Length: 230
Image (cartoon, rainbow, N blue to C red; front, side):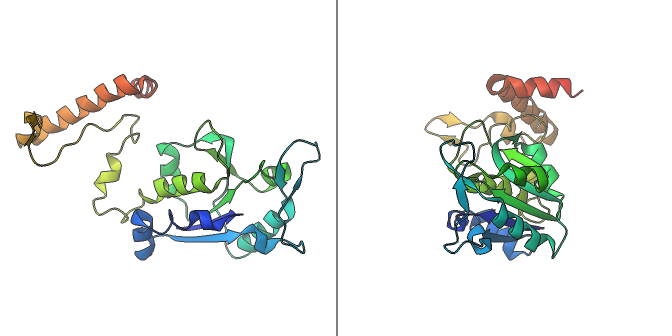
């Protein structure tokens, strides 16, 4: 997979994209990630990429020209499956979407900034708009990092134990069950006996029932989705 990110502030992405699982995926050649500064595509003398809104509203807006030139530069070299704009009014990101994106070969992430981008960018270039929640961030960089991390970790070969991703919360509209590790008793607090039994069938059933219980208690909306999936 190849991921290209268009941003005003590539520095914001240096740390989250160069450590942990993402770095491991890059080292294994499973994914390539490139950040591109929109200022490199500006035709302005001072590399300006924003301007005032015609409406007179407060805040600056990213101009269409540098974005157009950046996208044309990338798409002239390869075909992209999606050109994604990170926006608070986009489709809400979830595990299902992460799974969907993990099946793609080439992705462009466009990070908004200030008051967003010229609407003509969204009308003519963007193929998918994604939000990470009902709140506003300073820019789309952190949202892009969240989505990229969630997507990359489900790619085959990224995690040492590939089954781990399949048992994550939200994979089947259920939250993950509680997990324990050694020691089996600490300060009088004991690991549930069933997990020490060695009975795989009974342990699996316990884990499933705990997933149901946790989801019903903490996320009744998800539990309802799970019930309705049958």
